[in-house]
Image (cartoon, rainbow, N blue to C red; front, side, top):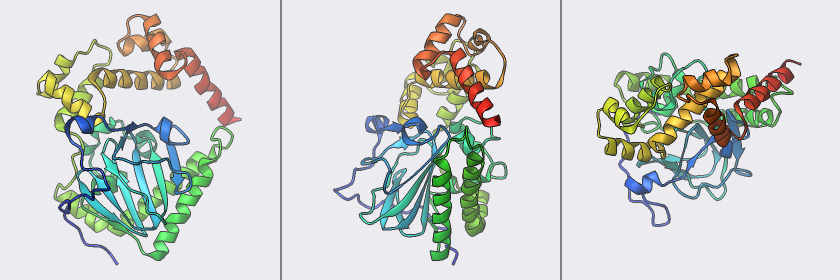
Length: 332
């Protein structure tokens, strides 16, 4: 039976045993998880109730997350609202969305962590710009975008199918993609099947909500403008004042928004975007490390190499060599 569209529920009083909604400085201070600390691979990870890492308080992460409930009753505290979770419920969390799901005492569940590039490999957008991407271009975003007003529930037969997909993903995720290239393809195929089941069941609701322009705005527009400014000017010396001017807010207000919405300072965001661009160029071009450093704002090659090593743990040349070795092992 298809569920009708639910309007966002008023947030009931929080239990004294659960953390209250966070705002301001408390929101900026919460944990900000990365794929490196919460997943088996840089692009994908899956856990269940037996090996999931604890999340005792509201938190956020830089990646997409899917929570598949097989057994147990709990509540999803997300973005200031509450959504019920029971057997056959699938919950979706966008990057940087503050949320919290207390584990049910008898719960059986799967938690899937996915990087933006793995979920949306053909989409050349920063994760903070995804609210502007039309669903016709990226239908994978629909359940994440409308989680605040839909509860994704499935019957017993479908729940068993969802569980089987999760088990398949977990089995393939344990394989070394360098030794077994099929594993990465199979994981993605199972993931898309899961998203396809959600689309098949909630197609009409997605279309109606999209036509009405109902979509949670996870990041204030000034933050989106700031990230776009950073991405387009990586080769130049960037200042908070310039970014604030491009974002149409004061520098003080922008600094507060960035910390509140992403958990990062302006300088941290700039450095992160530069390193991501550098890694892409090192992996997929033959440009010299010095040329790559200059293209992302480092006029001194030594400074670039030192900064890259501080963040990534190895020099640009060593990073490129590691990527090349992985590619060769995949092809053998």
